[in-house]
Length: 65
Image (cartoon, rainbow, N blue to C red; front, top):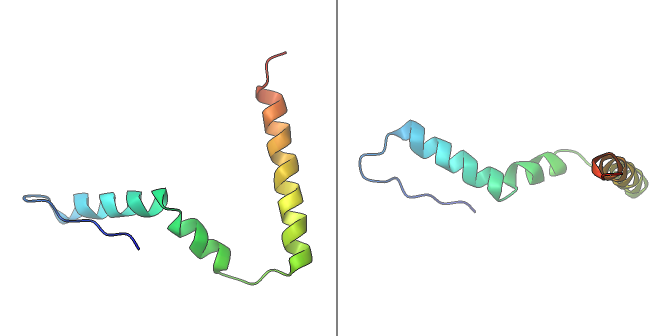
């Protein structure tokens, strides 16, 4: 759970911006999106393998020759 303390003299927009940043840093939004719908185990494995291939391609492109 993310908590922030509103600072003295801080307006609500700044506090909300800090709260959103903390949520992003803690991976809350990513977790919410992950739990939004059910994936079967086979589909989850397939997506994980696709993600691994994508990361490998990106790493290969960034690697100097």
